[in-house]
Image 1: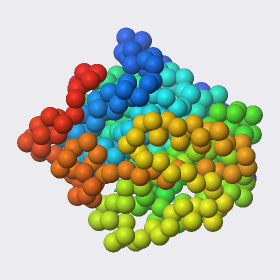
Image 2 (image 1 turned 180 degrees about the vertical axis):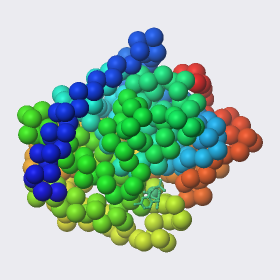
Image 3 (image 1 turned 60 degrees about the horizontal axis):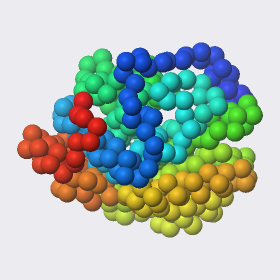
Length: 314
Ligand SMILES: Cc1ncc(C[n+]2csc(CCOP(=O)(O)OP(=O)(O)O)c2C)c(N)n1
Ligand SMILES: [Mg+2]
């Protein structure tokens, strides 16, 4: 990405005076709770219920990766990131930003955003319906609070996030940029171009995470195109690499805190997060078969018996 491109990106942010305030009647108390681990686990259980209900309701969508990344996204939004939630400011000045590069796992992001108070929880029922703001893959034209860029075409999110991270530096804004990527997504060449760029430009205000579930749409990553030694690869590209268990909320909290403590040291940071695709629903766990398939009525009923309703279904 040339420097002129960054300046354009910075200008385009400045020209977006969009400030969307969620209607106060819908503001959820949950956005104000203390984020200790049992509370985060409780939110995660509700988010998992939302995911399977949304995908069932639309008869399409991606439950596997969504369930696998639930503990991470809940911890990120309810514990780690400094945002202005439930207010949403498109320019993101003075607050941490998150970019979902593997946009197909939109159900977990939409549920987390709604439960955090960015938009009404009831709107989750419109997922993938005609004219919804909750498109199958996140998009900006519908104006869903919390979404700053379209994603779903794999491989692009790191480049976008690096532009935002550099913009923050140019603006003297010391808040951080977080990203999430699929492991299959790492097979995209643009990821590695962005990785080189970040190290070269010492972009040290970004914390990326890989959903290292070792599965992708058509099988295991080893069968489709092996990723090899991911730690060695990212280190060779000049990144600081951390690892964590993506289903241990204490580990997620402490690893993200450690990563935050390593920002500002001249190197970009990436966390290899081990997860199980489909986590929380026994018949969906550990297989690519639930990457992008909706449960039928019977399967939904079985899934819901495994996931406690904690905050109330939409
Ligand atoms: C550029 C591009 N190519 C192909 C696809 C189709 N696609 C959607 S998800 C996916 C698998 C990605 O694997 P991974 O990142 O590991 O996600 P997971 O299956 O673990 O959720 C593919 C190939 C896409 N969305 N974008
Ligand atoms: Mg994967």
